[in-house]
Image (cartoon, rainbow, N blue to C red):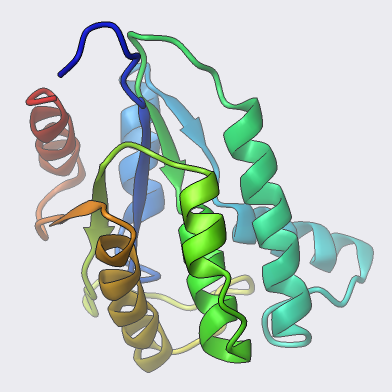
Length: 184
């Protein structure tokens, strides 16, 4: 690593919905790391609260455009320093890959390069034993798997190295992430 260039400390935790991302991020936050909550969840919560229509089950494209805007803002507003990891629950690539799959708009290459994260990304694989639907996550496991497969292709296509998170307890998962990042 070149010591003159600050390393990108923005780390993406993404992958299959219901795979334990939020629980892992809570653990990383408890350990003192900065955490940026999932843009999509925040938008769904706001839209439900205000009676809005930018929901993935009402207006998927409108929802994803709002997620892209919020992910760009999250990236711009996140704390920047040479010592602290900042963990993102999903990011710009997730929403951009989804909207490109739905509309065919070639946004992934452009937006995916304009807003970079740490070169190592962590993806949660499908984990049916812990998957649950709720008021904010209405899609089924099949849709979650399709999302995972899309991300498994999208991140490497943009030059990211991907590690699949092992299906282990949350503390061990956090250790895995931090131990992997310690090599950088």
